[in-house]
Image 1 (cartoon, rainbow, N blue to C red):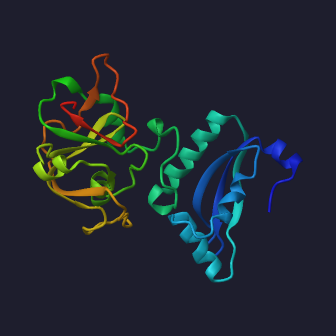
Image 2 (cartoon, rainbow, N blue to C red; image 1 turned 60 degrees about the vertical axis):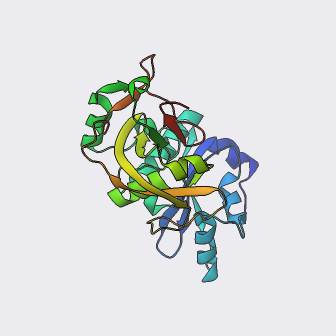
Length: 248
């Protein structure tokens, strides 16, 4: 199935949902522009993803996922904001999306989180002398997650953690960072191969991926602080997903 040329012109930038016909619930939210991307997901036969598995489950009972348009005729930035808002409203844990989407800096927040983000005391990263690993969980974090889910999101499934880091465990303080704010601190006890410890998340036992086990440090002096660089701006997320302090 695909949109006609005239329909695509009317759609412009749009936000869509994939619907489970058994309960009429959205299980995936996406954004597209003047194209048939909404239907492309239905071709993901045999792929290893939660979305592909959900589609396979629906087809296993002789049903077919529906595509529904949630908003259309948008400019690109608005489409990103709408996509992120819908994901936040439904809860990432209730969808097969991997990340919260764009525009999450101003996304769904509890009153306590809003206060935390905008009234926290900043700390210069160069002033931190403890050996810490910063885990940037912006894209997968959601305020609807439980503490065990935030813990598992922070500790798993990291690529390329060196043998020295794992074996010596000198960098034994883990900071869970969202938009530059340290939302939780953990004491790292030991490292293991990804998928080898009990978790709330689906296993990702791939080569050279690792996870730690540890204990939450609710009273740690860095918990709730905003990490800023020398220019006073919150530190950006690293592409690798984690970084070290003091900086290597």
